[in-house]
Image 1 (cartoon, helix red, strand yellow):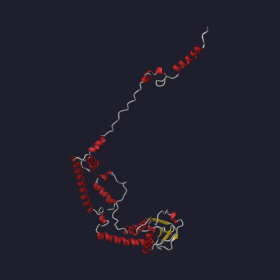
Image 2 (cartoon, rainbow, N blue to C red):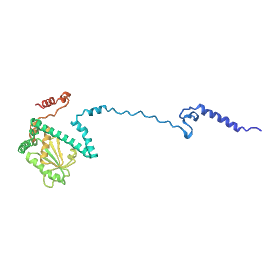
Image 3 (tube, rainbow, N blue to C red):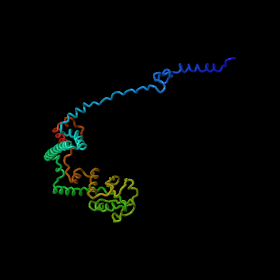
Image 4 (cartoon, rainbow, N blue to C red):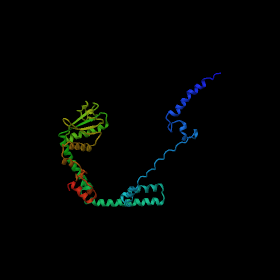
Length: 314
């Protein structure tokens, strides 16, 4: 009897395949054939490599911070800024007699230092008119009232001069109660200083009180001037200069001050006239650029004061 060929055929086909898989394919330690990965163990006994331990955390250098804190003079302003909050927190979180008493004593020290500073400040101010505010605006009632009257008189003169070259745009709406209250104030500006007022009705209707019977109906002026709130007032120097004064109800004093400020910024009144309208003396201005300052000036208090006074023309 002849031997069947089928089993021999199977072996003849499968053996080359097994050899190819074992020797031809790349065999890496992690993904090669199992017999080359014996170090992984068998089945569920597979050995899982431990993750690499991270390098030890490098502690930040604290020498600079510690040295700066140790250099703080006890009970100095810098010391209080650094430590006072911690004493207060401890007294609140652990309100024992000792903790609360320690905090209150430190607070007493801080308040006494503030009182000493206030006393010396008052003494310095009394001897220097540049620092003493009463040289600009007196505290005495009689002197302050006198300054107010003189400034008011100069303001009336300045407003009369401005009215000679500029008028007012007054935007209103007939159903606006604030416009009703603003209209008599605008009328007084026309009567007292000679301003020509151009009343413009945003809704095209007259005011119920009869003010400005020769009003104009808005034909796009409000939109071109970005009027979003009424009453609105603009200072107008024909033909092209229109300066906003305010949108919303304003008192007479506020309206006058804003008109004078706008006229001063536009160059219509000089500095002397402008400052005469203010109830305060101009004094010495120490506003300056810090570009010329150097470390020597900042470290020497006497030199710093001399420098600032020289910059102010003193």
